[in-house]
Length: 170
View 1 (spheres, rainbow, N blue to C red):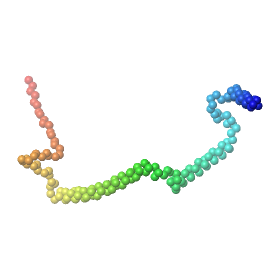
View 2 (view 1 turned 120 degrees about the vertical axis):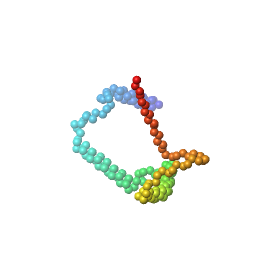
View 3 (view 1 turned 60 degrees about the vertical axis):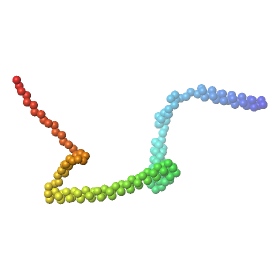
View 4 (view 1 turned 135 degrees about the horizontal axis):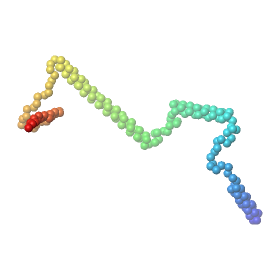
């Protein structure tokens, strides 16, 4: 028991001495920043150039491999979007809406084709009629009768009356 107690006291004393020694050791730097100028004259420029060359080669090799993978085997780098259910469903919905819009656009194109051909025929008939006779004028105004009064379409031009006043001098 005394042996264990003496060993414990010895270890405790050693720890106290180490802690006190570290407290007394002065720190050389107060701002804890690395001074890159210390030892700059001892740096081997040949070693720095070699390290720079090695890092450049690694960068080129890594970028070349990534480019090759993206071009040839992009599925190995990109995530599998089919595993993400909400995103997959949203893409399916977007695809369905796009196809529906494409079909609707095709239907409207067919309808407008018929309308465009009709308009082209009307323009052609007006062009041929303008050479043969006078251009058709506005339709005659309907005669008011016992039925409801219909409003005339189009714009109305209202002109102000100009009044001339004569001044007499006395």
